[in-house]
Amino acid sequence: MRAFPPVFRTLRYRNFRLFFMGQGVSLVGTWMEHVAMSWLVYRLTNSPFLLGVMGFLTQAPTFILSPFAGVMSDRWDRRRVIIITQTLYMIQAMALAFLALTGTIAVWHLIALGVFVGCVNSFDIPCRQSFIVEMVDDKEDLGNAIALNSLMFNAARLAGPSLAGVIIAMSSEGVCFLINGISFIAAIAALCFMRIKKHETKPENTHILEDLREGFSYVYGFKPIRFILLLLSVVSFTGISYVVLMPVFARDILKCGPGTFGIMMASTGLGALAATIYLAMRKSVLGLSRLIPVFSSIFSIGIIVFSVSRALWFSLSALAVAGFGIMAHMASSNIILQTIVDDDKRGRVMSFYTMAFIGVAPFGSLFSGIMASKIGATNTLIAGGSICVIASLIFARKLPVIKKAIHPIYRKMGIIPEVVSGISP
Image (tube, rainbow, N blue to C red; front, top):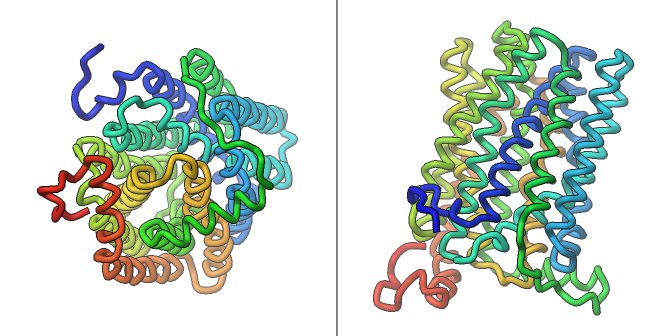
């Protein structure tokens, strides 16, 4: 088997290597579209409130549909679902490109196609997160696979916005949409070339609502999962919505153009990339839960500092810190959840993870847009970051309960030998 450095050890699995390369190309295009859409909405409307509305409408379907998608993820062939969702993404990107390049695009087009993507996300994200375990033969490598998946996401986050900023300045947003549409060919081809063992799906002998109730009871009843998802929800609602206000800071506060806006987005990606490298270098899940409140606090402090900065270099540094904190928080939560969850409930748990992290975000985006129009973008981010810090402190007080609940699972999996079972989770 081909040798890889320890930090990239999961790439020795052929299926994961294909996934890594295909998604890596596609995600660069996705981030280009994300930046281009935000800039286009603000250019057409000059409204921070409509940025919030756009963020809400494009992500709200995830909150509504993700739990049902999780049930389907436990019932259906996940690779087939992902191929379908990637194809739908490509159709949406090509529609955006056609409208933008022909000069016929309007805000309602962006909203309608954004809602469409939100619906597709609802099925794609839980399936993709659950699919990782099927590409990795040794569960001890699961944490590294999740970290590399995040690394791939953030490497694209670093390259995509920078490219988008240059292309928008030199040409138009439509070119970004076109490149994104073409990029999905790589992701679809990689999925088709995989050799996946048949996934043991949950029999469809119960009603979908019964499976949903079972998944909710499992998530709510198991305290480590419940506390992790609650903190993610708070951070998503009050903190991550800073992204929708980025055009306001770029154009109106820092007095910059689309090129600098792309660099600001890339700075967040640079910090997030550093976080994923750090997590990929870790050899074990042990000790990760106690770092979650530390990571979320780092993120919170980063966005507070960014909100009060009026110097570009200082703002970029603060965004890098925030990017490190939020990605480390998100990926650590993902690693722990995927390690402790029962296999037959993996899709449903990851759907609640998606709902907590992505599905709650549109409500935060809408709220931030409203608050920014009343108290200003700076005060909105200060308030959101402060709430995140308080939530992190509350989570830290729950760590003894989390440790007590997950240690038996770690011992059963052999992660903690009986003789060293006192190691922190």
